[in-house]
Image (tube, rainbow, N blue to C red):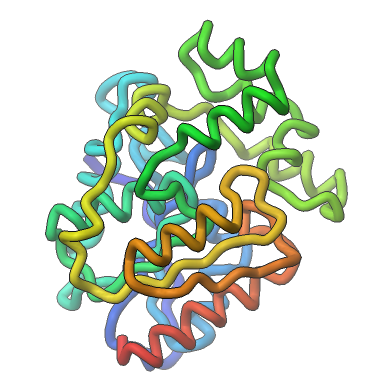
Length: 262
């Protein structure tokens, strides 16, 4: 299966390990290609963003509804296996959960970054928060077995993904690029936990202070699970690669890679 992969090559490669960027639910490789990838490349990092199967222009051999987290892990493995040097895997939200399962399976990686990630304990608390905030959208999600109702309108998408200060014109433009997500993957995030005890590579955990999907407490608990401390960007919401100030997030990743000699 040929997956969509977008690449930003540095003019001078300073870091030996490439980066593979894994998007979250409702997104595709495009979310990293609004500036984030190029920022990494400008600082000497070879950056690659994939669209998981059924996202962006990547194909899917079965319906998106039935696509599992294991399927997504296989997609990351497919891309990562093309490099001579083990990559650093950067996973956002659902992509962070995929990354944790990828690492626990022992697939090649020099390190990992979890950005506003699904915690290793899953999305049960998140599910209750969404149900309380948007009961109608939550009901439609479970009646139709689709995750689209959660972000079906620009106001819903803004509530879930973006900060209050983001311009509504920008929100509408980004909403136009969102898509449905796998209900099976959502169930996996509810019940299929990764194994942090099997992870041996360094992990950087990043969170957003205004995130309505995962709380700061959850991000900090994730960091403790991986034996580290979380870096919290207090003025950001969930989509840290698209929020104003995303440059600081990219720079934090590169600085961490330098500290880890990656």
